[in-house]
Length: 116
Figure 1: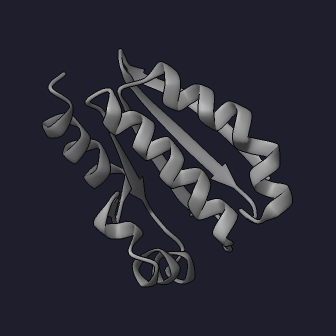
Figure 2 (figure 1 turned 180 degrees about the vertical axis):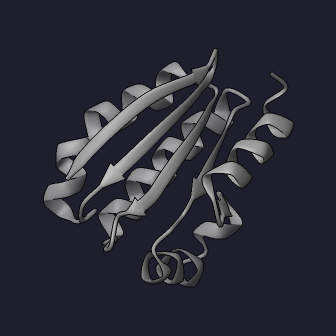
């Protein structure tokens, strides 16, 4: 599992995940993912290269989203693999974290919700 973190503007970070978000994948990216959520107010998470997500991956996303929400921020998921999106919807994640079809849609929503 690989993670890339890219600031898009002050307070807004794009995190791209590449690989399976299973037990080992989540362990590999957790420190950098947590750091991105701690440093930003709004985090866009590109899941286009994440073909599988286990419950530990969902936990990672929700923990980050809750931390962002506590400080008035938000998380936006985008470009999900269809199977991953199916899991996120089935588990109710979509009720807590916005899911967008594309990175551009997520960026537009983040811009309107972040107050930046």
